[in-house]
Every structure is written in C-alpha cells, then in structure tokens.
Image (cartoon, rainbow, N blue to C red; front, side, top):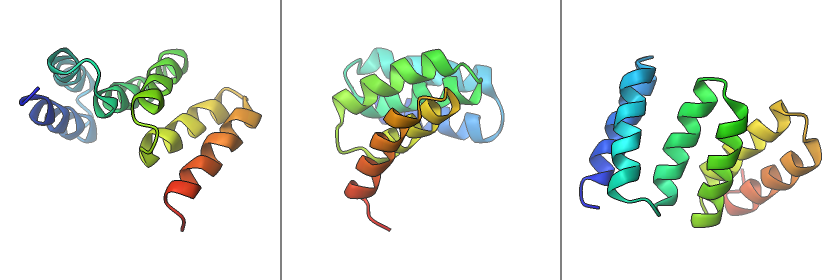
Length: 104
C-alpha cells in the first residue's frame, strides 16, 4: 500500500499529458497495491471516463463512492457519468451529495 499514492499520482500526470495507456498502467499498479482504496477506484474511473467508456466508468465510480462515501470528486464524476448516460435522477442525487460535502 505504500506505493499506491505514487502510482496514483503518476496515473494522473500521464492522464493530464494525454498518455492514456501509460496512465492505465500506473492506475492498475495502484489498484493492485491497494485494491480497497476509494482513491484508486476514482483514478481508474477517471481513466474510463477519459476513454469514453461510460459503463466501466460508472461501475468503478460507484465502487469509489461505496469505498469512500465522503469523496467529493468521486461523487461529482459519478454524477457526470450518470448525466452522460441520461440517468438524470441518479445524477442529480450524486450532484447534490457532492454539494452537501463541499458547498460552494
């Protein structure tokens, strides 16, 4: 688990640089090093979302929210995925939960 933050950070840097394959490798390493981490689920969900794989993004982000109910970014990103899938009722619920956790 002590390498998980490093792998997660490298995945996010690679994602920001548009290196999706490299980001996936780092994200998988993070997930393998700590398979119960909500933060790791979030990074994997972000990668699926960037790849426009909404079905996988939704599944992984739902796991992220289950693992870390107070993670604002996980709830926000899940709300976006749900909206993109036209599940507007659930999207609204997640967006409101996100706002409750981090009001503007």
